[in-house]
Length: 111
Image (cartoon, rainbow, N blue to C red; front, side):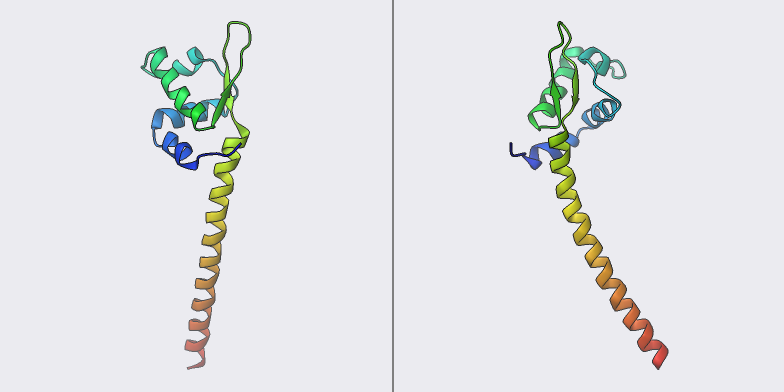
């Protein structure tokens, strides 16, 4: 399955959805459990869950009459891999800056 990073990051733009993901990081939960901390209706929370599911960040399952949701490892991993690529590029930039600064310092000490 390929992941749409645009949809994933767009889903994270909403503070309610980020809070839902933080709640799900503690373990799976039903819509009603996820709705408790918010002053929203169950249908409003369901809409947020739909966006998160379409972005590949959460998955649901059927357990009798319950429909618990949990984090989707593959979706979270896809975002993490993209961010890791940025972190690696940033580290290289900082390493180059350190080299330039060290060269400037040693040149100043020689003079």
